[in-house]
Structure formats: C-alpha cells, structure tokens
Image (cartoon, rainbow, N blue to C red; front, top):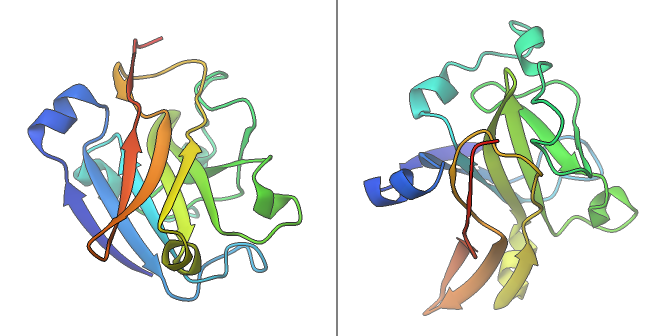
Length: 179
C-alpha cells in the first residue's frame, strides 16, 4: 500500500468535519481475499487530525479502542464493523448491502471508519479498472441517523473526467447538527 496525506484548506475544515484526505493506492488490493484484492484506491476523508490518525496503533496493541464502537445511530443502519483494525486508520465499517458482499465483483464501495467510539473517516474505495472504464459515475453516500460533529456532510460521491484527469468528488453537502 502507498499512501499520501493531503491537508484540506481552512475553508473546508471550518465548514465540514474533514481535516485531511488520505489517498491510498493498493496495487494488489488487500484483505479480505476474493473481495478487495483488486488494484484499487482508498480515499479516506478524516474527521480527526493527522497527528491523532498517526497515533492509532496496531490492533494487537489496543484492541479495546478499536472495538469501542460509536453508539447506535452514528453509523448507517446497514453498516457493520469488519474484524480488527488498521494502524494509522482505525476500524472499517462495511455496508452489508454492497454488491461485493452479495456475489458481485468489487468495483466501488463506500466505507466508514471509527476508533475509540468516534467516527473518524468516510471512505470511497474504487478499483483502478472502474476508474479507467467510467468517464462519469454518481452514487449516494449512506447517511447515519446521528452525527458526532456538526458541519456539512456529503450526500453524494461522483467521478468526473476532465482533460484526462479523474476527479473523485464529494458533494451535495447538507448541514448536520451534533446529536
């Protein structure tokens, strides 16, 4: 895996809960085998500081913090945590209705993440093949019923190609109060 971190400008961090984006390139995919083992990109939109993210240890060091899930309602109803967790990322939550968990090949999906009872990232995950084959694409971003931080949250994710550049866009932002 190869990762770069991109800080968001102050205007974005003031209006949204997001502080930085982690762009991960997985040339051979990752676990679980047979599902996410295709070359793909992970776009982690983090709601914690980079310092906090980098301090997340290996699962074996702090399993109680990885397994300390957000209270009911802070993840979309159809999301479940995957076992364990990833250092410098957290626990990953997957939509049980996503096609790749229901007999279809993985092309794109939308995950969320947590650590120590906090929702800490929103994550579009998209295969290289899907990005190359689709000049445009749009999907709904699953919404939790409650939000730990107030701010503008995306309701849609879109791909758009312009002059040979593929843009991964979160949009349709709606203001949510802390609940």
